[in-house]
Amino acid sequence: MKSRGAVIRQAPGKFEVVDLEVDDPRQGEIRVKMVASGLCHSDDHVATGDIPVGIYPFAGGHEGGGIVESVGPDTPGWAPGDKVVFSFLPACGKCRWCATGHQNLCDLGAGLLAGARWTDPTSFRLHLDDGSPVGQMCGISTFCEYTTVSTDSAVKVPDDTPLEAACLLGCSVGTGWGSAVNTGEVRPGDTVIVMGVGGIGANAVQGAAHAGASNVIAVDPVPFKRESAESLGATHSVATMDEALQIAQGFTNGQGADVAIVTVGITNGGHVAEAFNAIRKQGTVVVTGLGDLTEVGCPIPISQLTLFEKKLKGSLFGSSNPSSDIPRMLELYRAGHLKLDELRTTTYGLDDIARGYEDMHAGKNIRGVVVY
Figure 1 (spheres, rainbow, N blue to C red):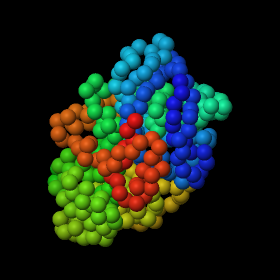
Figure 2: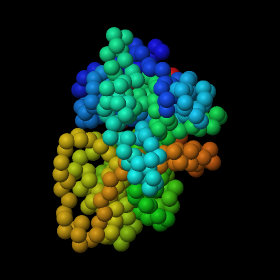
Figure 3: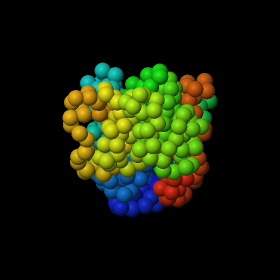
């Protein structure tokens, strides 16, 4: 099938829209007509080269939802017309991690940036008109009008699901909300700092508030993002971590926050160190943001790690199980406990993706969404 899609030809580079050939689905695959896709910072990391990929051209997008157009042979449980939300992390259901309730760490994740089918590194689902292979971001490439994916990456949702909102459940919402609720284990009465309140941090604010935190302190240099955070559950919003630390200490007899969540767009060791300095004894730092994948080192005092029993934890997709957590968060949205529509700041067309990322860098969006 012919389709248009946004690709990166080299890094550093910018997304450009090209004509693509999309494979017919094989066994265990579905082809999906996209409805909406979020503009996540991780795709921008691919464009800048912070996240290297296995092949160029590389078709972006890993947060989206659509309608099944066709189903591969011998693929029970799926039918044309089904609505799906993609999980940017596939879940095979069989490996050690899936079997123990850690689908976010599924072994299939090793192929996220290779661009090929999980089982065959020489087999690609997307091609240019001349037959050249095109890699798929996280095996799904939601920046395409049509995309063929493994059913391991798709979660079926009810027919009345508004995909323009629900598409965000496939990355940003689950990642941020889960960073607070699952990884950070925020409890009622806690004081929480969220460092960086863009597409991920805004949902960490929601998660902390939903978990019952008494004080949720949002930190971001952009006034618009601070205002948005307050509408999503932040009790305080400030521009710097120094201000956040003072507020947290004021609520905790000088001890510091119970949990600090790092969701800065381009995270480095200095950000982690600031968060580490802002937590109490036995407090927790959750590191969710990404930056240069080759960067090594974090300037934290080892004495505090040992003597104060501070905890430093990474969080991938909010330590979630997408096949169960995406439907659960959708129900929270339907019940009015989780905000999705309010996250979508600007809607773009496929040809406007490059402008969408310019807006993201300018601090204009909580989440930009491409609607097809």
